[in-house]
Image 1 (cartoon, rainbow, N blue to C red):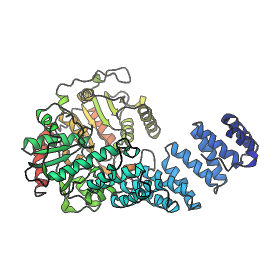
Image 2 (image 1 turned 45 degrees about the vertical axis):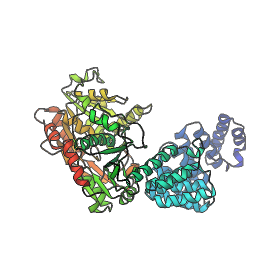
Image 3 (image 1 turned 135 degrees about the vertical axis):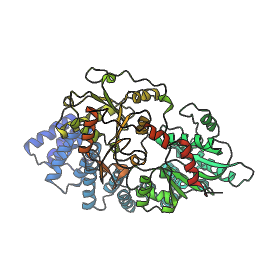
Image 4 (image 1 turned 180 degrees about the vertical axis):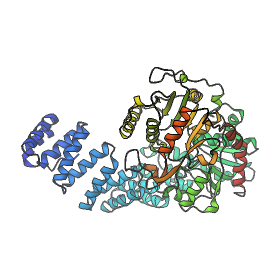
Length: 612
């Protein structure tokens, strides 16, 4: 943080600061402010020192005072923006950087910082605009060109990024980041030959091979082998499936089930993982999946390459049609996703909601198909027993008559803030019910972040935790057996999500016979109806962070669904007070209507006519 613009009246404080005696410097700056509260030099120095000491609220206060007193003090605005960014107030920080960029259009630092900040906030168009300006101000600086290229790649503009990065390497052949990003851009453009060329010039121990470049090189060589095999008639015909097989995710789960079902239908497959030919251990013991795991690198002449990934992760193979099975949680996909998928031969999505999201972004209707996945019990659930868990009021969770489960990552899209508000409003302390809220995948800061969300909910609703039915808040990491034990506890599953591509947890709970409460939007409308579940009416609106005007970064500039919290509170209250009278059972409907064999059949129908 820059303090070079201090006035003469703070000279002693500056001297102490530069000598490394921050506490003495801060005391002198504060003394100067007692004599003259408008001393801009003392305010800026105090703000800088407080920032370094980690006293961010006080630093913000000092610098905000200074900016109010002297709106044209550019360095103070930059310092304030740095403090706000460190506090996580990205929008407020961006506002300060924007003012600096407007006051001094040639202030390169402001454009670079603002571009990088906007990129993190999901505003890729804004990021690209300011990073372009930074490049114009420093045309010889390779690092700023690389930053611009990264922003372009996030928007799906791989060709322009590759052109810029190639120019950087022409002048700076040893620039490792440029080389790695260039290779990634070539893979996204379906040019593994150029990706390999970009990386094969450096050794395995070279700094240019850092940041995943070794994996990129491995995938480039793999794709070139597959492209060669596609031209060899003596190699067996089949289909390539690339998915995050070794990653615990919804896409990985779908991929394993589809692979199993396709192999049962006699399809010959070759598998590739997210990083290439990495090892894959099936998530559950099954002889067909075990056989699939041994087919990771067997030669095959693919009629098409089926990826099960978000669009930016798809890497086409020359001469092989590119199909992407993917999904989205909102009414319209991001522009970057649309740009990526328009370069592919076909997009397959699980629901009509996702199909409309692609069409809303301009994707050609004739190059998109709908194929719902299967819904089946998790193998771990067959032998699961309820977890022996005590509630927050000293009563065993299993002693409660109504046990409502929600399992969610700690992300704004899951609308945990809304779920907590509804719980606080709808329930009473003497209700024979408990909310089992499993959040995130562990981490040192998670419990504190969730507690802050609970506190915000109490302030907004005017209700204390003690006034409502108890909440068993779980933030630790659990293995598969532990998660199965949580499902075994639940009588109901409650989602208030802003949007879902599919939502595996609620389908898993439904298969086990839990009563389901969910919003009437996105994927939920594909497999739930009023006969088998309680559905909450919704509206659409901006995809904001909880209690903030900031966009949720993956949905920047987009809408999502807003469940009606009054209606949700009414449904929840009725279910808790009369669980038998309000009972709706989705288990049979889910199991019989969405088998994996039918899903594989639909997928093959969707792929009919693709490739040879």
